[in-house]
Image 1 (cartoon, helix red, strand yellow):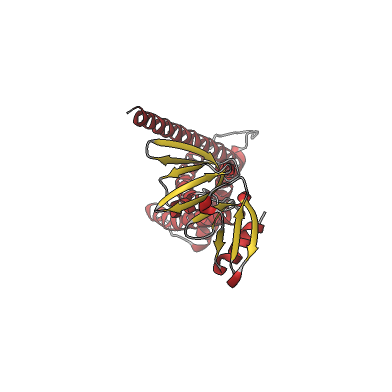
Image 2 (tube, rainbow, N blue to C red):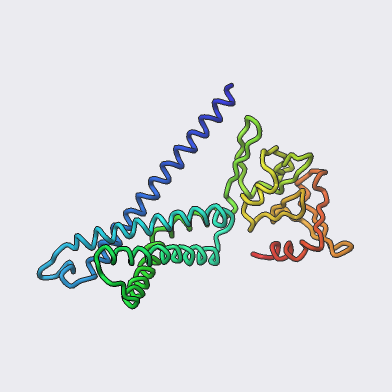
Length: 280
């Protein structure tokens, strides 16, 4: 009963921290949107310049820009959550960031064109292709700047999480264990149970499957060598070429475990493994 209560308390604490983190993240983004809108609108017309002789606060432009920023922010956030779950949680690299930006700008384009046509219809104005294109290009340029400002910190934090100090929470029955990536030598499966093996040879039973772990962990540090084993790059002690183009992997001597004393890699995975192992 005590263990169950502790788990519930831990989960509530984690949930509360996530909620606080989400609210703080959106507060920061709204602050960025507000400052961005103020700057853009104060530079848009001469009478809006702060040092203009007949200064007038650009209220209409400011409010419409804030509304547009929030709409862009919602699109960027939804796409960011998708990329975070599928790509950024495992690996943050230039290619994935670029694809995130390109796809987000694509969604904004899809939103902008029909919205502009509808607003022109409401205002009983004709939609001219030239002005539609110019407006779209300006919106995409401003969106790129806005998204970069709003999400640079989130991406940097995810990048830090992808380093060796990242932790993985392992639940096994009533127990919750936190292990850092650098303390894990490998994961292996036996009789449909997956074990985490630490650098000192200690094993921890997990509730994960290897497929779930493969999706969850950092693939810069871990590699699934076969159906039963996922290894950490730093745990490899020796690589040996054997018959039929296969490889035999020996882990460091401190990792004493008969189940993973010798690990074989098929010739089909050999090139992928060597490319991963040699990549810095």
